[in-house]
Image: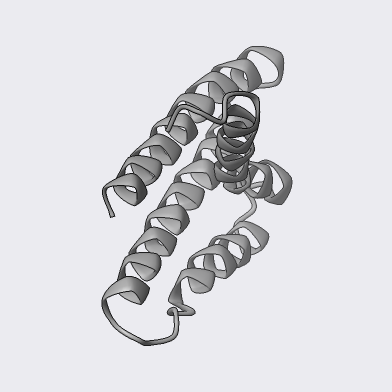
Length: 117
């Protein structure tokens, strides 16, 4: 389990760093409004990642199915973005996917340097 907790911390940290870098880049290239929309999506993605990690922890402790409540977070933010005129769906969706970039970074790191854990 120690290796799992280290992986969880690494993914959250890489997601946070990527969010900061991308937020500043989007702010400089586009506008603060689009960058804030991205940030809303990225924060939602981090909440989703934490909920997913908790489901994985529960799987190791109990023999039960993972919760589907984490999908409600994503669906909820997309519904709010589609109904509220000041929010834009695409930056929020791309921000939500930031946690996947952290997973890709971790996989590439483990492929390039398989001996370190």
